[in-house]
Each structure stands twice: as structure tokens, then as C-alpha cells.
Image (cartoon, rainbow, N blue to C red):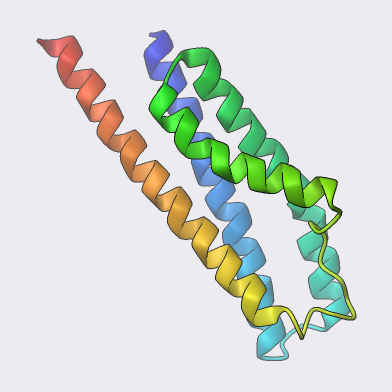
Length: 136
């Protein structure tokens, strides 16, 4: 039963991260097509950056405690990047620089989304593998 709770929490955390990143990407696309002004876009993006970092940290911690080392080590580079950008104070979007960094921010978010989708697929495969081992 604990294994099932682990997988449900892992999927919920990964899907939460994907939703947060999708929201940020949507805001950047809206900004690119002038559907939203830069101040609103950056303030909305900045509101979800720290929760994204916290959820990523919780995901790594849950995998560490549960002993799922492969997924933990897959999640560790993203956590390191988040901690590094937070400690260098590069994690918040700047209103004055948002247009200059728009393409690089979109690429960064698309990379994070692709990375999390890969982690999600690996988690699903691990879940199926765990369930088939329990049946045998």
C-alpha cells in the first residue's frame, strides 16, 4: 500500500510541475503575441517560480526517502539548477528584460517540460515494472 501511495504522490508532483511550467509557457506565449502586458506577465510568472522550486524539492525528497534512486538521480539536476538560480537571484523574471530574454526563457521552459515528461514516462514504466513484480 505504501508503494501505491508513493506512486500516486510522485505522479501528482510531476503533474503539478508540468502544470506550473505550462502556465509559465502560456504566459510567455501570450506576451510574445501581445495578449498581455510585460508587467502582468512577469508578476504572474514570478508568483509560481518559488512554488515550482518547492514542488521539485519535495519530489526529490520523496524519491530519496522512498529509495527510488533512479528517479531521484534523474530529478537531482533540475533541483540543482533551481537551487543555483535561486542562490544567484536569477530565478525571477525582470519586467525590463523580459522581451530580450523571451526566446531563451521559452526554450528553457520547453526543456524543463520535455525533461519532466521523460521523468514521468520513466515513472510510469517503473510503476508497471513494480506492479508486474508484485504479481509474480
